[in-house]
Amino acid sequence: MRTHGVHCLLMGGQACVFYGAAEFSRDTDLAILSSPDNLDCFRAALADLEAECIAVPPFQAEYLLRGHALRFRCHHPDAAGMRIDVMSIMRGVAPFDVLWARRTTIRATDGDEYDLLSLADLVQAKKTQRDEDWPMLRRLVEADYLQNRSHSTPDHLEFWLRELRTPVLLIELAVRHPDLAAAAVPRRPLLAFAVAENPSAVEKALAAEEAAEREVDRVYWQPLRAELEALRHRHG
Image 1 (cartoon, rainbow, N blue to C red):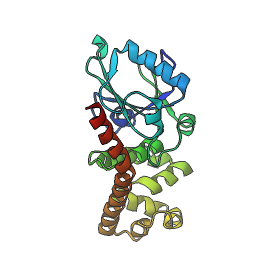
Image 2: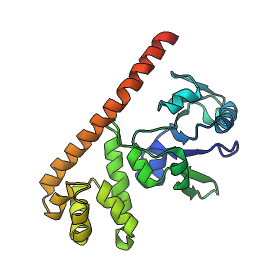
Image 3: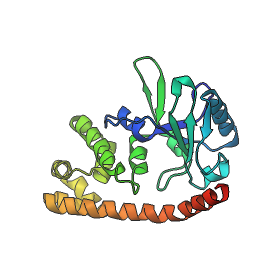
Image 4: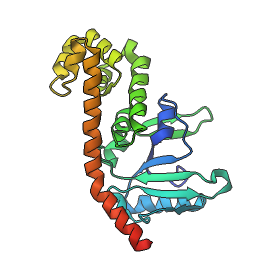
């Protein structure tokens, strides 16, 4: 992707590894700019990878712009079998230009650089119907909290109050910063239980929060899934 100048950001399981929430994934999930020029660069990268589109919808910008994921399988010997999934629009996630402006760039020990969704954007992208996404979301925020709580910034505190999903850590955060936690209750009501140091109530409220997000995601995907089913029948 870098060789061909593709504007894209790593997300999914491989991004979670970089952020310290270890998860093995052979798939590469990318958020991609869906402009014509950038998609031409992406086509050139796919050609080098000997990658083919393996499912509906077909590789057309219109489907990316409607929020669908495009899936490819690589056949180049150096990447044989690897799947690449790309999206341009995700529910509740900022537009690509915003994602790009606040991206995280990590330099590996071999000198290669990787552009990732910011941690906050990756967490937001993980709020789906999929069972496997919620434990990973929890681990992502928990790892960030444990790594940075001794030298936290206002941005850290705002992010943790909004996204932490570990009851004992939410309570710890609320006890350490009671005024900030109390001020955030209107935006996230379950923080009232953290301020009151009530772990069972926090746990129950977190479950309700997750269920509500899953339902919103289900409703969002309902018409997109219907469109995919129609495409499968058409290409059947």
